[in-house]
Length: 407
Ligand code: CTP
Image 1 (cartoon, rainbow, N blue to C red):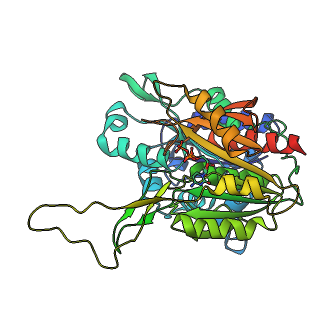
Image 2 (image 1 turned 180 degrees about the vertical axis):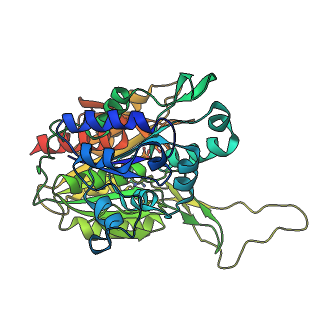
């Protein structure tokens, strides 16, 4: 596996030397990208000798190879350790002022950051906000360890032990489909065309307002990324997603349910697998206003008549736009007094007749807009086929395994 190890300028940079050794000993190719400040702590010869590769902080050092792009495109995993307050800030802002931050913008693989800094800096609202931003984008930011810091002071902010960082980083790419962390991905979806819907549809109320939902599109994008990595041709129908498209995937942007339905159905004519990961609006205004709806002086608000949207997943499962096509759905459930999450999922699986239905619990802090997910995969009869909990890429791989086992 090709790993990019970013090292920012903190005293804990010396521990990244041990991390580099661990990753090399596990058989991985590691390219170290230090910041200029990191080289104040550990010099370039150390990084180059132990990695066997050039270690430059500068985008202007290897111009013929356009290093920041080539490194990012070929990486299977990126680890930044230590991630200093400054590095977290630059990464959160999307800056590209050295080779490390430029590479962070070009990678499409999982990224793990291991912060290390003084407790005050770690607890500062600016750092908290930067960490929250990075996590919301799917970056895995470890919690720092507590203990002795640079001087005699102690507190939260220590770099976790190198073995811990290596294990956490390799776990991001170890998945049922990966065949083990150091092995290349199985190309078990090669020759297959998969269509994935992602994000959340928006139904216009008037030219400026819409009815929508909080889906970020991350699970759908993870499905697209992992399917591509396993050799599939991927069409991604993306409803209002603010994420960077995975490399090598065809993206069709849409807004409303009608647009999503049309795009999915057109692509599905030629698809072996269709996965409906989008959160589709169940209702739409019967007649969206042509002009912006005005506030009335008497304070009365006109009711807005809604009508049901077609159930795209149920239609696809009933019609099979291409013979033998596998149709997969997601079910976001909260559970209620009448039934738990799984019971609702089972009922939905039987109702929609998709070949597979990935049921996940949603609500405060679970499912939507967070990096991790947990699903139970059911067949059309509501029987449990598999369970998976972890990163959205991990869950995506588990779903592709279930698809693969259907033939
Ligand atoms: N879905 C769809 N078309 C719709 C609504 C949902 O294709 N009009 C798909 C979703 O993409 C997902 C699955 O159906 O794959 C389940 O979505 P969910 O919102 O959980 O189910 P609903 O059918 O909307 O049922 P309810 O909201 O009553 O739970």
